[in-house]
Figure 1 (cartoon, helix red, strand yellow):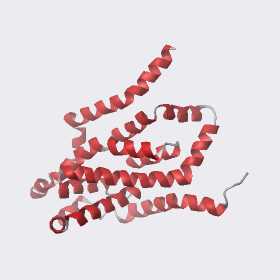
Figure 2 (cartoon, helix red, strand yellow):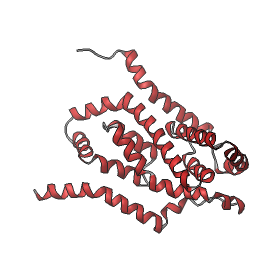
Figure 3 (cartoon, one colour):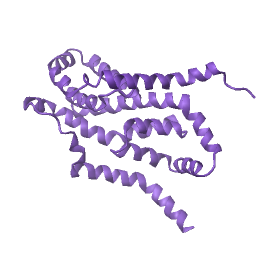
Figure 4 (cartoon, helix red, strand yellow):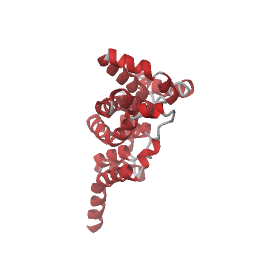
Amino acid sequence: MTTASPRGGFYRHLPFVIIVIVAILGAFTLRDHLTFDALRDNREALLAYRDAHFALSVLGFMAAYVVIVAFSLPGATLATLTGGFLFGTFPGVLFNVTAATLGAVVIFLAAKWGLGDRLAARMDASEGRVLRIKQGIARNELSFLFLMRLLPAVPFFIANLVPALVGVGLGRFAFTTFFGIIPGGIVYTSVGAGLGEVFARNETPDLGVIFEPHIILPILGLVALAALPIALKAFRKKEI
């Protein structure tokens, strides 16, 4: 039987450690720079660059968005608004959702490589409540993943980290992330697409729009749909 060397264990943890360190540093150094005011003050330069170099602006925007999400830096909501402001609701939502998914995959892989596989194995070998939680997630994996993405109350970082720690596969994680964040992505991208009028009135965007009944109710309907398989399995189990 072979055991991993301390050096090998260090390199396995290194990507996740780097993400945590950069996230902490970014929280203190960037929170005053990645703001709505910064977008408003630089909007003309951004629009001019987009008009002159559309492809490069798309690639640069998506790269910046991936970095923000991958390192859990402040400004993810601002990035989504910027995508709508620069590229419209569509294709802006496509750029936003794709970049957010790629950034989420980076966190997922770093956590899974450094912590997730080992922790998932320990959960499988455990007994009692911990094992039941792991088995419950495994039995309802797709529903569980979609619920975390659809519920506005679940922080994006937590929804990236938890699946890695319970042994979710990369394919299912990426699939549910991409499609699960589309509803919220459409809402905030559309808010960003209307920023021109907001700037003209010297106002700030209403980010609470997602909780308006005509928006939150359809999202809650999707939440109920995602939770339906879990409820049916629990009902059938109770009947047996």
